[in-house]
Image 1 (cartoon, rainbow, N blue to C red):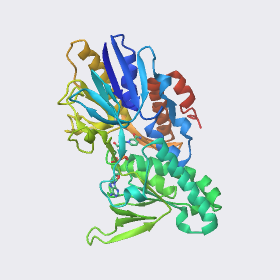
Image 2 (image 1 turned 90 degrees about the vertical axis):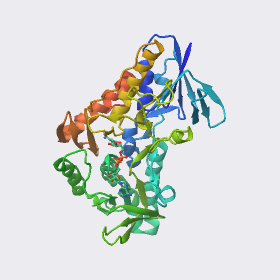
Image 3 (image 1 turned 30 degrees about the horizontal axis):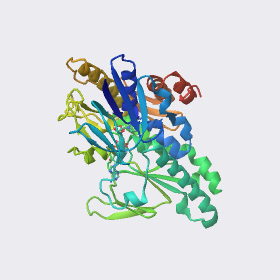
Image 4 (image 1 turned 30 degrees about the vertical axis):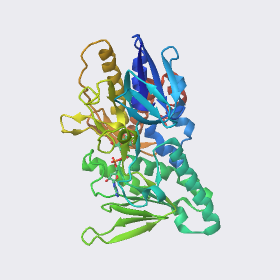
Length: 402
Ligand code: NAD
């Protein structure tokens, strides 16, 4: 019997699992993840801002595992020994596979900028998101005794999708922070420092501006065209003048790093030569060197033939890749030819807090409350498709109508 190993229970890994569990071929699956739970990576900002508890964005992996077909193994992968078809774990143990689907997800990317790892907070896991929230609350409590205004300042580094969604959620969390500090909400200062001036380039200028102005109207102080050069303890150092290179510093009690992500370090540790730990896969999502290895989700780079650039990493493409890799793997096990991956983005929508959003759906701009409604419906549909009815009912967003 073939042994199929899926590494990672994120969007890509769980979707591959679902598709494979639905096939009655003669194979056994081992699903591996370092956590006993799956988390909705697209909702981390809500846990960081405290607008949702961790339970709302996680569910037990066992809940989606069919024990007749699959074994769940909670372990941390150190590397993949592709030559010997083995997964090596951090405790030194190993697991043989006939086929492996690598879906190990993303990590924070510091771009080698000094002080990021020591002095900025990453938001790439449920624990790190929860740490941000605890830290903000600790700073607010500290203000009561020190009256240091920097304790009330929060800086988000980078205004990509993640940064923008986090800013919206932080604005919504502001009342609670203010109460903790014993100040009024407008005394909580929320900043964002961003390298470029043209934000969210996947949207046309008018649509990006709509979203950005929304945040500004909510009191977010946005500094654009200011690349961050270093993070110090309690301060962000950024280039203030592009011509002279002169820098400035913004002091703050909370500094959150959302300037982009890379794939899991396991990719480099497994001997791949990959840019930002994203493996350039074959058109059928297989490893170019080993045809029993599929690489999907944030550890994978697959070309968009239209733009001639790799597709950006999103939950949407990760789930599609999961489905596709599972389909190709079944074909491969049955001795049939695999197919080339194709993807048509349905669009992308960025939330601004719980009731507003903006983005593109089927190439049409959407904004405001209707966009938020659409985004929540997309999230509920994704929960249904990956987690099943039970997860959708308990974790879905049912506050669509207010
Ligand atoms: P990103 O790369 O899309 O954005 C990072 C931002 O940080 C950019 O605006 C960049 O200019 C800025 N930046 C980088 N280095 C900087 C520096 N030194 N100083 C100041 N600014 C700097 O990363 P992301 O926002 O984490 O998103 C990652 C991927 O996930 C993207 O493909 C995104 O579309 C996707 N995503 C989608 C959604 C959604 O669909 N709702 C939500 C979150 C993320």
